[in-house]
Amino acid sequence: MTARQSCAECIRALPWYASGRVTVAERALVEAHLADCARCRDELAQWRAVGSALAREEAQTAPAQTSAEGWLALSERIQTLDPPRRSARFPALGADSPTASATTLFLPYQPVCGETYDEIYDEDDDDYAFILEDTLGETMSTEHDQHDPQAPDAARLDTRRRVWGARATAIAGVAAALILVIVATTIYAQFARRATSSVTAGATATSTQAFTTAAPGTVLFQSDWSKGLDGWGASDGWTVHDGMLEIDGQDNRTLTIPYKPTVRDYAVIFSVQVVDEPQDGGYFRLVAAPTSTSPGFHAEVQGLHTDLEHPNGDHPHAWVFLDPRDTQGGNAHTTDYEPRHAMWTYHVEVRGNGVQFKRNDSSLSTAETALSAAVAVTPGPLSHGPLTIECGLASLRFGQIQIIAL
Amino acid sequence: MDALLARIATGDHEAMRELYLECRPRLWRYLAHLDGVDATMLDDLLQEIFVAIWRSAPSYRPQGSALAWIYAIARHHASHARRDTVRRAEHTHHAGIDAESFETGRDHGAPFENGVLTRLALDDALARLSPQHREVLRLAFQHGFSAPEVAQILDVPLGTVKSRISYARRALIQEYAHATAHEEETP
Image (cartoon, rainbow over all chains, first blue to last red; front, side, top):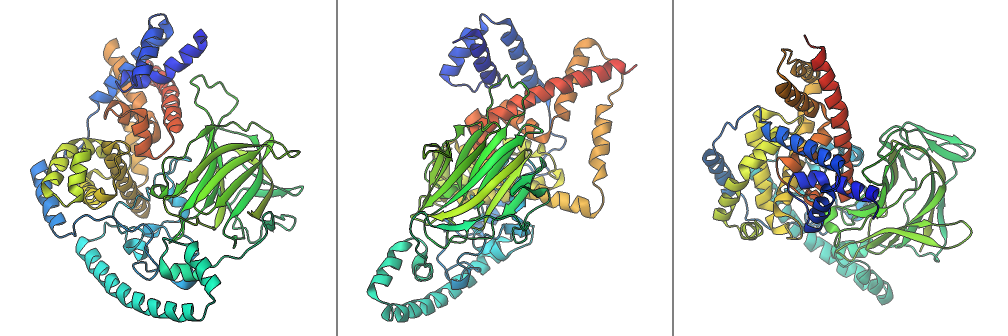
């Protein structure tokens, strides 16, 4: 390792070394390097000064309640609640989901508390602040129709849960009868195919979630911007030049593909060129919004750099992850990835409950680079849209967007 | 903490009390420093957070840090509270107050001996960092979280945390230079 590489590694680890939270290996690296490097010793002194300054920082207010008073109030509150229970992330249709019905199977995800989909992001470009962890347990179900920004009243929620429970029982009974009629009039092969197509969505979902079939490679959708962007749901900033779509370098730009695939397995293929990064942090991503029964996904390249020096080695990267995160089996890996300024073609391939994010290495070959992949803990399928391109802080040029059957 | 959450998942009130008494002070400090959170609502916010922990305990999987999981829930609720505060502020046209107090906060005026002056310059530089940068620094230095734990709390990749702390350092240097120059100009 060169002295410069060693410095870079040391500088990356120094804030965590100063705060006392480094791994054993990092500690060894830092301490070996500090012995010979005055510059890094100065850097460490600066981080320690920062730590001291933060330790001096006191809150401007004090709690109005003591801990004992706070616990008393909390204790009374949780006495009125049901015992903790594992919440149903994707409730069976008709069971506990006000928006679920045979005709709304592919309705776009409705964010809670009246937010728009964009608002689930923090003001920061890459800051996925809204945790669909469903911390209240009812977020995906009871709060679906609740636009009151105040915290939900526990008693009201419990009442509502009981009402929905009663309704669910009645609906489930009717649904079961309907299913029996449908099953009796449906040929066995079709029934068998549907029965295996969805394990988690419940019987009602299974019988309504029919996919069309198409030969693998069939082009289902092809962008054509020659007549403008009507129907694309484009935010400000998009322009068409010479058959290509261009976006300015502002933040929070979106473009919704006016097509949702009807086949089970599909790929979205899009070509992107990074023309310019006016500031660090540029990104672009393909987002499939989650539905009431299917996890969505984000396939993204983020942290694009300007050409300025970046001595601390932070790096642009690519990854794909599911939405909500807790539907994902394990963590999706990220890949350090810097597209520079070439036009690259990206493939987002959705097969059942998995999604792969790849880059084609050349238009003349089938060679490709795997960027990231994610698999849901449930059998699937993943969301089929709406599919949206989101980008910001980078001037981009899109060559084409294509959706094919797999 | 994992064991406490496992007991809470079975409806154990005593475990909830232990967790509450252990976590409340540090969560208070974290929330009190988050930008845009209404300090007068902190008791209510904390109660909502602990109710969420009570309800969500069965879904906790001990694959990361339990404390980071709790902070992530706190941050999620604070972010909702912050949006509500912003909406109210926009509605009542009070949005300018923050900028005003921000400027006043910088004006500490009187001359100090060098050590104190430098310390104040650093405090000033920290105060002028973006909320995003300050939050990463606070989670690391005030709350003692490691980089992977900060990533878990902020729900961002590990690389993003490292990038942010790197940007924070760069911004701090710039702000520190600015604050020092400001103090030198002050008679």
